[in-house]
Image 1 (cartoon, helix red, strand yellow):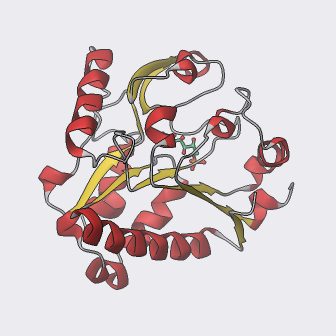
Image 2 (spheres, rainbow, N blue to C red; image 1 turned 60 degrees about the horizontal axis):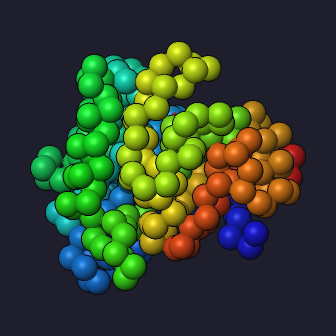
Length: 243
Ligand code: 6PG
């Protein structure tokens, strides 16, 4: 795959992805009046979000026309240390002038998480621009990859991997004994742009398997992504050391 770039570390990755975000944002705003981006969770993107909140990007990016969604969320309250919403708020959203009404939190802490997923899917259909083939389309989806090849909350062996029509589902992740909410392959594959950020020595084994197979393999859900748009992999030297 020729859309893979290896960087020395997460700081270099953050600078490259922030630049990409700014360019895509300017294009989307001039094309259809807004930039609709799904944030990924976990620890890797925190560096990128902090970087986007530095003066260079704070001024450059038109936050007034930016619409923030989440690729997945844990079943915890928005102030919980495990919350992706909390991580994104602490590192970026509380530091830039983005209207609160343009930040769409996944309410995954509720007991009725499946109904909440249906509501979030309806919100995506309502807010996201439409692609030429009539699909709800993110301008950018940020993704990470776990050391088991999961992405968002699309974990190996879970029902959500088979979801073909819904954009968002709740999913019980057996190995963690916990509920998650996640966008599905349909929502991801219809994005205009996807950026996958992979860092750390602990990812090198699975990354080399993922990149060498190059074909859809439910063992590694991230390889089931068949984007209609553009996908870029941003990998650090530690994660690439097994490739
Ligand atoms: C989550 C993420 C998840 C993450 C990977 C990698 O909610 O945990 O959305 O898919 O991207 O687990 O996480 P790290 O960046 O912490 O390695």
